[in-house]
Image (cartoon, rainbow, N blue to C red; front, side, top):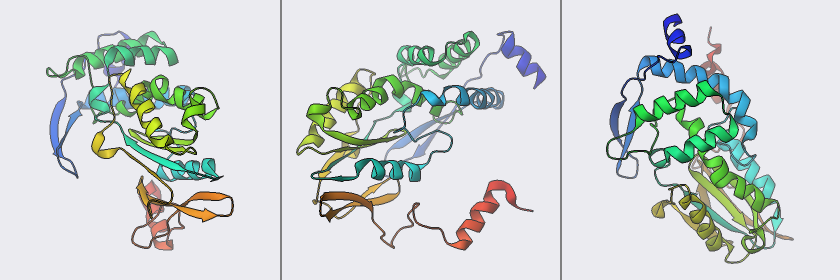
Length: 283
């Protein structure tokens, strides 16, 4: 550890090549994982623990993926509390196609510098990006198996998508045409809510245009929008949500279907005990 620390501080540290593994996806296709060597994982994990408290406050409140103290359950709570009761609601469910594989390195370095421009931090990022580059996709991508990749993905999406979404929610342009009232991003998953009829399609086009500025695009087979009361329930981040008619209009709520375990529902005492044991409290 002492030798590794000295190499990093003296800038003689050299990352090792990634171990690349293909794993099948649940709905078809393969996922390419890049696993760093042990020394690289130690450096990245240490840097992640040191840097996260310094830059996490830059991220927007609607971002819940890859952040301490956030989870799919907090994302759903944020969505439901933001929606309230509206006369009309349309829900946009979107997914970024190959987020980690398509991060453009020049844009990523600019996004990193905008948040924290420490010279050693920047030097390490350049060394890792050079080591992570795949011959088939030069200048693009970060490995999904690296400890630092989720943080880099959030840094990339912060100026590209998260800030425009915040401006839209704060009644800035183009909120007048989108009618956006709530938004959640969890990693590469988006859930956006509009109070305008046909606002869902406009949000999809707007979001796809934003992603295009960063060499990203929406996954057509995982992106859709729906309106009330056109569906009984919508599965989002492991939770089913649905529209319920109330006096003022429509309200989004968690669907308490016993066919699945909802993270917002109280846990069974045995489940709470198992979680407590798995958190490291076992004797």
